[in-house]
Each structure stands twice: as C-alpha cells, then as structure tokens.
Image (tube, rainbow, N blue to C red; front, side, top):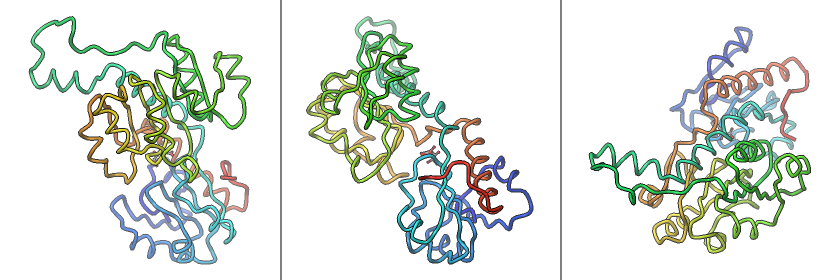
Length: 312
Ligand code: 8YV
C-alpha cells in the first residue's frame, strides 16, 4: 500500500506483480486507515504518522513500513518492533541534495537574497547604492555544524570550500572530519557562542526538540545565521522569529517547520529570513533514487530477503 505517493521510478521497479493501492497526495488519515487493511507493506512519507492504530488496522500480514525519507520521526519504531514489522528509510541517496540546499540557504540568508529579490521585483532598485543590500561573506567565518551524520558531514565538506573554520557537535568524535576538514568538536553551548553560521543536522527526537530555543539564541551572536534542513521541531520558531525581529539573531534559512505544511505565521513576517517548502531532497536525482530505494526494500522484504536500508 502506498499511502500518499511514490514516484514513477519506484513504481516501475515494483512492476505489475504486486497489488498496489495508492492513496494519493490528498488522502486523509481516515482513508489511510481503510487503505492499509490487509497490507503486506505500507509505503509512507514523513507526513504520515505510523503508530499502533495504523499498524493494527493493517493486521498480521504487515511485514514492512517503508519510509520515503531518511528521517523517520513519523514512525513509532517501538510499535513496529512489538508487531515484528521491519522499518526502512532512504539514507545516502539524498545526502548531496540536502547538504547542497543547506549551503544554498546559508548563502541566501547571509546575503538576504529574498529581500533583495523582492525589492528588485517591486521596482525599488533605483541604482547602485554602496550602503544598500549589504550582507556577510562566509570566508573567514566560523561555521557550526550541529550533528555530524551523513548530511552534516557533506555540508561541512562543501562549506570548507568557502574558507571557513568548522566546529561541530557529535555524540562521538569524528577523526576523519577533523583530519580532512580541520573541524573541531565542541559542546553545543560553545558551538552556539562561537559560530557565525549554525546549521542543524540532527534527527528529530524528544531529546533534540527545540535544540534552538530562547536559551540557545541568547548564547548565539546577534549576527549569527541559523540554518535548518533537518526537522521543524529542532527549532522553537516563536523564539527564532522574535529574535530576528528584535535584532538578536542575524538571519535564518529554514526548510522545515513544526506543523507542516503550515508555516508559523511569525516566521512569515520575520526579517532576514529565507524560507523554502521542505525541499531538501527535492532534486530529480535524489527523489528518483529515494523512490527506487523504497521499491528495492519492498521487493527484498516481500521476497524474504533482508532490506538494503533497515532502520535499526
Ligand atoms: C523528504 C526528508 O523529501 O528524507 C527526509 O527525511 O525530509 C525529505 O527528504 C520528505 O520528507 C518527503 O518524503
């Protein structure tokens, strides 16, 4: 069962031999409950919460929940494992795409591209003005990477090309990153207070919820740039919006929000903010590869083999 949608690249691999029920992007939670009945596999994306109710509606045949995303905070892993249901995700294939978007948001926030573009389109550009449209260059700045997983690491690699100093947080020290990129591991508070750019690359868990809150912002430089391509819950958006409005935070580049697809009203009105609609993995290559990986995992489990990318 595909509760919302899967790209053609994945459907092509699944082929004709499986009965597919596809809910469509507009399907509702009530429809999902109907759709999953008797399913062997459920394909979901992060907008579909997978908990006991949905799993029980699927019933005893259910073997796999295949998440069309690397982040799996929408899936209740405990409830799946209690029922003997495997969970898979789509790591690696979206690492470049997501890290590149984080770089794009960093640059956009540093130069406030949205405001410059809005101003040009509004016909307000009246000629060259040395004092206007000024931002910050990245060269020589300190970039703090919060979470040194695959995407954090790729972001660090890309950012090192701008001639920045890199700090990072991670549960364990990452020698190869330190050797190759000259990055230094610090605690979160030190990273927040020393960095000019702070980019979040953490999974969303109870522990990481509102990593960036009022307390964290108070530690940050008033010129700091905050970038979030992880999950909306990592950031207290009211605190971020207030800090931007009051000049206690330099700029923000955000791709993810609490309560998506809603975007917190206060962020929409905040200055020096680049906002994108959760497009981290939205490249042709990454999204096709994600869909293919979903299908490869589904086929493996249906054929009694181990999936390629289980969530463990
Ligand atoms: C997805 C994502 O595109 O993989 C993730 O965790 O957030 C994105 O890559 C999005 O969640 C829809 O599947």
